Length: 106
Image (cartoon, rainbow, N blue to C red; front, side):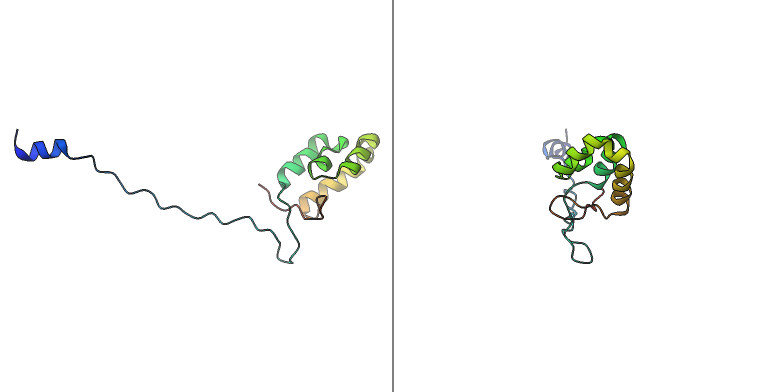
């Protein structure tokens, strides 16, 4: 074996440099008007309102336990209350217990 072949066999395998880390911007905590944004997911809230809204599960999800219980007893205001909540969630005007808007879809 020649010296070049021996050097090639004993040399460590070349490793590519690690991929650069792309910084992920943090989720905003306020909207463009300065209103606080809830960490809750708007998609989860909308799905809960759509699927089991008459039981007020979406209200329990955002911390509104009292109105969630009221929705259980009234079956979501006979569906009207659920419909209003679902529309409010979809347009981005639904708020959690602390009064923060639920805007993040993730």
